[in-house]
Length: 127
Image (tube, rainbow, N blue to C red; front, side, top):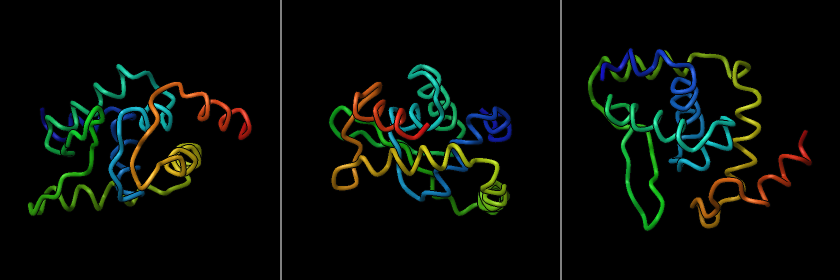
């Protein structure tokens, strides 16, 4: 899939911006909690970004982690710099949820899956 076509969907653009902002890998359940989207949708978005060559994936046990791909091409690097120019004010809620969700990691790794009671409690407290 073409990179520009992959990025034309708002949630995929949000995922790429967030991965650039946090400079860390994410798993599908973290993406779900940050975007407020279903497992199916987030997984599909990440697979499209993977197919377009924007992210890479690595499996560790039951978890698949996604990170921005490192690419030496001028086009890719300029595109990523352009995405990074989107003001963080556009993603206030996502940043808030992302920071809360990343703080739940153990030793830097995602350890809780979707619809976890601890996450749901945190979200209730932060409304």
